[in-house]
Length: 303
Image 1 (tube, rainbow, N blue to C red):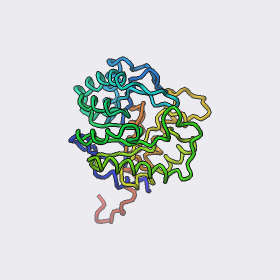
Image 2 (cartoon, rainbow, N blue to C red):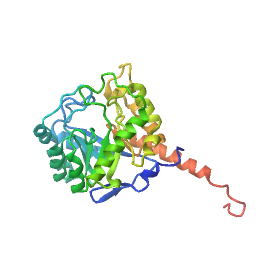
Image 3 (cartoon, rainbow, N blue to C red):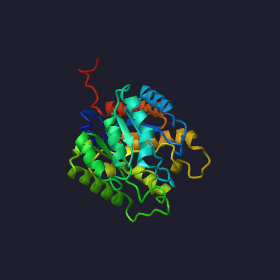
Image 4 (cartoon, rainbow, N blue to C red):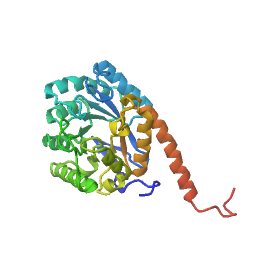
């Protein structure tokens, strides 16, 4: 695809619980609010609900168009968390943010009971990293609530997903799996315009797989759904493990801009302010290209 144009699937926007988020060539930012003790990047920093709420408020001020609240780490090797504990972690944060921000709140979970509690507390999006494999009831729940639904590809489950992942046809296998999940969601009543797909950077992928997926997001977007990319601070950005996750900001920004060029509609990030500033320059670059693509003025039109 050319960098001047967005994938056709993004033109109508993303329908989330009674509102439409405009999607275009400059991606929206989804700010990550982890309420966990063991996330790979900021585990434990925002386990306190008050700190997590303040984190979310700061992200909105910095330019986040969506806040994604999660109570269970899905880093490689992570163990599952009981639904009751996950609800205990996320519910105060969702409730606290819902009353104070004007952006939609997403709940990052694979469990229908957690998603239901969060939606009842004000969440407008369910971000399911299992693409309905772990809890198919999430589809009917999203349909009933009119919630947006993110379907992410993951090979296996967090404890085993990085055990020598292999794809005979990387783009085809991931695209087919997400298309099956999206159709399953549609059969449960989720409107097409409420669905976003995510290739699952780092979820059962090698470093080369991740690079290839970001380089050709347009191939996934051609399936007809907007594409979300979660690249932020991940280990594929530093395969030599020389840089702590929280210090991978330059690598995250570079990867985010390349994802934008490749067709991403939404970027899920830890560092909202930095990504917003970088995307501001990207927006100016797009505008400059559009201006230079216009026919030159005739002498009569010139000022």
